[in-house]
Amino acid sequence: MTQPHEFSALEQYRLLQRRELGAVELTKHYLDRIAAQDQGLGAFYAVTADRAVERARFVEERLPRSTRLWGLPFADKDLWNRAGVRTSYGSRAFDAFVPDTSDELPRTLDDAGGISLGKTATPEFGMTSYTESLVAPPARNPWDTSRGAGGSSGGAAAAVAAGLLPFAPGSDGGGSIRIPASACGLVGLKPSRGRVPALSGIDALGGLPVGGPLARSVADAALLLDGMIGRKGSRVDDHFSLRAPEQNDGDFLGYAIRGEGRFQLGVCLDSPFSHEYDIAIDPDVRTVLDDTLRMLGDLGHGVEGVELEPSPGYPDAFRSVWQAGATGIPLTTGQEELLEPVTLWLRREGRALSGAALAAALGQLAAFERSVIRQFAGYDAIVTPTVAMTARPLGWYDGVDAVDNFAKQVAYTPFTSYVNVAGLPAISLPVGMSADGLPIGVQLIGRPGGEGTLLAIGRQLERRVRWEERHPAGWNTAF
Image (cartoon, rainbow, N blue to C red; front, side, top):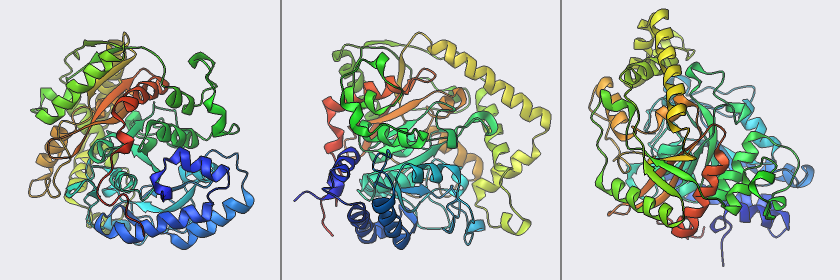
């Protein structure tokens, strides 16, 4: 008998709508899987089982079924406050913090009819591309538990890949959705700056962090994205008509279901970090990229190479803004002593920046944003590797100082942060596997506001590869 988690999130939604599955039943199913499997994964920092069941009963009895995520479980990344639930931000400095109010994104997902099961793991304040903080055990990769799940949405990715959640919201300030999506074999979508009102990036330093979905399929990612945007009204079933893309009412699920269109694609292997760091693409990653490009050509898309113009000021400017961002973390002197070495380095370096230096760095990134949009304007999407390597072994970042730690993060993730700087949408698609059985993602970067095109291309590749049918060990285990 097929278990509920073996259905896609969209299929689970349909079952809920037809009353063939109940919200309480589905919630308890996922809670049972979390109880049985998460101890070996570290995907969750907190599981709020009693609250979740109570919430599921409320959804069943009180909320209209027309809400976009009606009855579907998710979990909050532990960077977001939920009233009455411990929120550590991945840091020992906030290990006992329990907020009185909820942040906007959890409230938006509640309004959409979702059911939070707890908090997913994140590195300290979401500052790194791996999820191995000192506040809890590391988030392990379900495909190989000796490997990390990536970061900073590592817990969310591990939970979805292992079937502990149907999908999960994440945040992405330099690749934090796409990196763990690639590591864990998921679809991870970073929306355009401003697309998700509750986590738009517009009010953040440099405009970097935005909210977006992690899911096992393109349609599931689009379903969650529409819920995160907070649109009211139409039901999921409304999107199964064969309307032309230009007639789409703005909802992204329609693009993901139809998967229509032929597009002009550029292929870019450059990184703006290459002026300061040695960037090398793993042979398995390059093989998957080449295979993907052949598939895209076979699907009828135009594919040609494109090179980024030199941007020698980028590494220092991005590093400066990242460091300055760490200075905004509200800490007392006693709390600062509990910070991990990388966070403490970022914070101290950020404090040493003068106002003039920070303004110059922000100006450099703003010029880079305009340049990238201009260079990519002739293409519907740009294809790159998501990351340069397969999922890193746990402890790969240990034993080096903070400067070398940052350099190792760049070596692993040289293609993601510049998309945040440019404010563009991007999606990581789990198109391939390495020779030793680790997922490998390919990134598509869209035009401003071009999420629909990314979802359409992603669905076309998904039909060819059928990655939603690949699962790590333990997927079919009943509890």
